[in-house]
Image (spheres, helix red, strand yellow):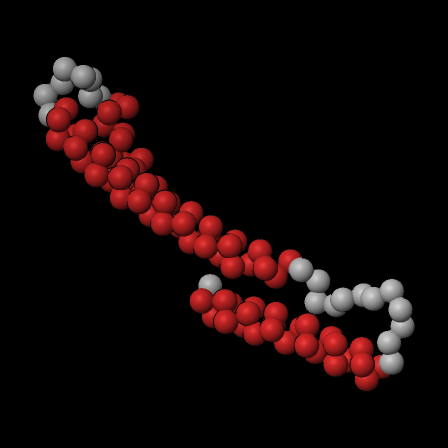
Length: 100
């Protein structure tokens, strides 16, 4: 990404240093600068879309992996309850983790 930002800076430099709106060659300068900036803009949009997709996947993960009950449970029943709760969540994390 850093190299693309440097390309933007380099492509815009003539407009900062020497070119004016009535200068010869302004149209090719504008077209080239727009192409370079548009390329980076498209990449940034794609990255933002990917981050949104990851956030959507991960929002399900915020739920607790342990369900605290008001009454005490025998250890075997607590373990069984915990496994039935955790198993599907861990599988979802595993599947979406690979996708991310």
